[in-house]
Amino acid sequence: MPRLNLQMPTNIIYQTQLRVAIEHINYSQHLGHDSLIKLLHEARVQFFLAFGMQELNVDGKITMLVTLEVEYKQQAFYGDELSFAMALGQHDQKSCELYYQVMRLKDDKLIALARTGMIFYDPAEQKVAPIPLSLQRLF
Image (cartoon, rainbow, N blue to C red; front, top):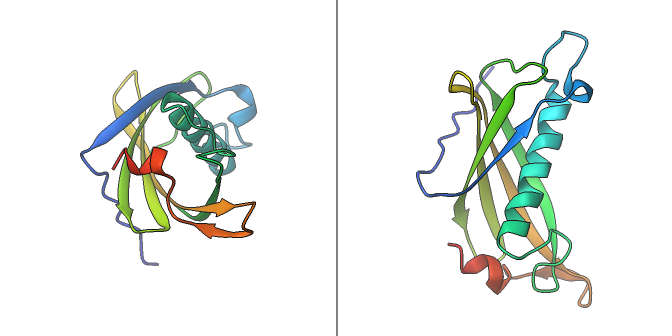
């Protein structure tokens, strides 16, 4: 099976910490893959808020995820404090990438790398819109 080979960009522009809660643990007693995706979403919400935006309103546009890639590297367990470092990747007029590096704080182990592809939807025009200016400023 071909594996992803995500490379975290060096231009980290945001970092947050989240704790693995009991609801994130699967029947194998570690962080479930579905729960990691929920934690990535929470980190993304916090990223937007830190820069004065919201996923549902970036200059009047709605953020839509069109791709999600995750490379799982290590298990994480109940109570682990995880660091989510985030960086912007490639972009064009109407889409951009957001990278995530998930590390366990107590031993500095890489838990996962992820990349999401985003577009922006203009509800008034009912179509995909250019990347909002508020986000463009971060590139």
